[in-house]
Image (tube, rainbow, N blue to C red; front, side, top):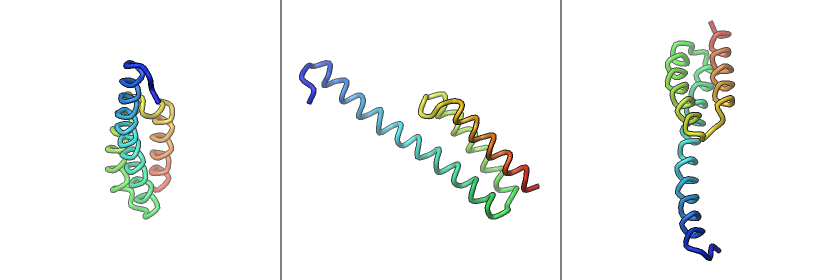
Length: 87
């Protein structure tokens, strides 16, 4: 357990940051899962709409350093490629 005042404060900050980032990461996963589900259902129009919102979420989480920026770019690229292959 933390002994000094600054270590106690840092532990509290880390716990709060973990909760926040965990929720944001969950939003990313949910958005990507929704796009993949519509791709599997061969619904290109719905997939395109969902991709737009997923891209915003991915970019936002990458800028907040929840996920790495290259991971966000890779995910967006793979999803758009999969949607292109539907058409």
